[in-house]
Amino acid sequence: MSAQSIAFLPSRDEAARQAFVGALKYYLNFAVEPRLQAVFDERLAPDAQSPPANRADADALLNPHPLMRLWASLTFYSQTLLWQSIDATTRRTLVAQMAVADRLAANPGKLGSLHLRDGFEPPAPVRTTEIHRQPGGYLRESIAGDLSAALSYMGSVDLYRNAKGMGTGAKPGQEKIGTGAKPGADDMGRWLAGVARRRAPDLAPSAILDMGCGTGEQTLAYRREWPGARVVGIDCARPFVRLAHALAEDQCLALDFHEGDAAATGFAEESFDLVFSIILFHETSAAQVRAILRESWRLIRPGGLVLHLDVPYQPHRMPLARQVTNHWQVRHNGEPFWTGFVELDMAAELQAAGFSAPFADYEPFGVAPYFVFGGRKPA
Amino acid sequence: MRPGPKPGARDTRFFDDAWQDDLLRALATLAMELSVTRDRLAALERVLQTGEAVEALPPDPAADAVQARARLKLIDDVFGPLVDRLAKS
Image 1: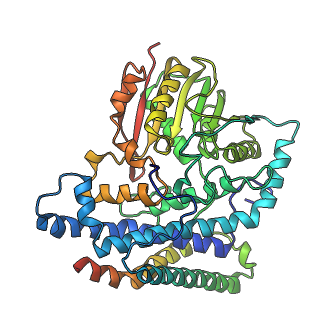
Image 2: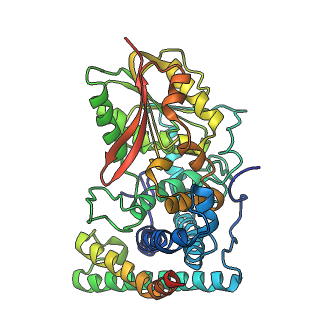
C-alpha cells in the first residue's frame, strides 16, 4: 500500500502506539473486566442488603468499587489515546490522501459515482454527539473536501476489533491481540454476504443497498461478491461517503455512494434485492430504528432480503456486571444508543415496520457472535 | 437530556481524588512510550540484519506476535499489581 492509494498509513512509531492502545483495551476487556465480574458475583451481590435485580441495582453496587474506578479511568483514557494516536497518522497523511481522492474523483473514466446533498442535515445523534468520542465526530470538516474524520474512523476499526480479540482468523484461545490499526479489510462484508446466501439461497441480486455504509470497505465486499449487481452505499456523514467513493475508484470497483439518511433515502420503492447494514442501528435512536426498518421494507423488492447486523449485547445474554460496563460506554464513551438498542424487542419492531416473517437472532463472526435481524419480502 | 459525554469532554475522572486518575493515566502514557521504543529497537535490530530502511522493513508476523505478547506483559506488569490489590479491597 503506498501514498498513491487510499489507505490509512501509520508510520512505524504511530503503528506501535496504536498497537499499544489496542493491547491496553484488550487487557481492560479480557483481564480486568472478568475480575470486576468476580468482585460483583462473589462479594458485592452476596453482601448486598437485597439481591440486585437489574442493571440499576448492579450499577449502584459496582460503580463505587475501586476496581471499577480503575477500569473506568483507564478505559476512558484508552479512548483518548486511541484518537490521539490515530489522528497523528491522519494529520501527517491527510494532504497526500486528499490529493489521491481528488485525482480519483476528477477521473473522467471513473466507474462509480458520488452524490452529495447540499443542505442535508444529518440526524442526531451523529449530528450532536462525538460517536466513540471521535474528536469533532463523524462530520468533522475544517477544510474543503476534508477526509480527516473518515481516515481516522478507518484507522480505528481494526484497532477496535483487535481490542475485542476479533482479529481476522482469530480462534478461541488464539485471539489476535492489539496488532494495531491497518487499512480496513472487507472480511465482515464478505462474511455477511455468506449469511445472506444461507438465508436466501435462491436470491440472485441485481441491486444492493448498504445503509450506514461508513467509509465503504464492507460495501466494496458486496460488489466483489456479486460483481453483476449495482451496489449503492448511503451514509449521513459526508466525509465518509467521500472517502468510500475514492476507495472504490482506487480499487477499480463500480459503486454509487450517496450522502443521506437511511431512514429517508429517497430511493424508489422496491428498488433493491438486498438491503444490508453493519453496526448502524446502535448509533441511531428508537425513533430512527423504526423509521429505518420501515424504509428497508419499502425499498426491498418481492423475494428480496433485508439483513441488518449490530451488537449482540441484549440484556438476557449479559450478566449484570457486564450490563453495567456496557452502559458505562453510553454514559462516558460516546455510545449514546447502545443500551437503548439492545433493550428493543427487535422481532416486534420488525413486525410493526411491516416485515411479514422477521428474524432476530445471532450469527458467529469468528470468535464473536453478532445480532442479525431482518426478513424476506414474499415473492 | 442527551446521554453520554459532551462533545470535547476529555477530562472525566472516576476516583474521588483526581490525582489517582492522573497518575494512572501518566503510567499508561509512559508504558505506551516504552512499548513504542521497544518496538523501534526491535525494528532497528532487524535493520542491522537486513540493511533495509526502518520504514521499509517488510512485515514479519513472527516478530509482530512476539511484540504483541511483550506489550500485553508490559501492561500486566504495570497494572496487574494494582488490579490484584483493588480486586481484594
